[in-house]
Image (cartoon, rainbow, N blue to C red; front, side, top):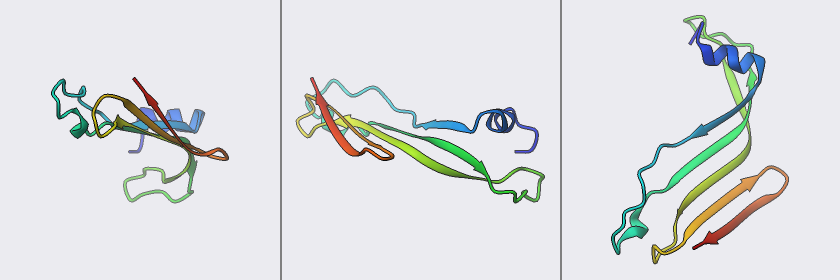
Length: 94
């Protein structure tokens, strides 16, 4: 959006993080149905192509993706993350 505060923020510092909202995991035996949450982060790079409304176009260079959920039994937190140059990792926590 032209004139938006976030646009000024990206011009000043192109780093961004986009995080999904999530509910708390349910405390029932069926806790493995919890959708979990996700975060994508990286840098927003101006494309130089303005929109019809005067907004600025950006493309994103993703440097990290993190997905958090529960294992099938619903008794462990599972964190899967990919980082640029490091590949994919999976960690389970009690």
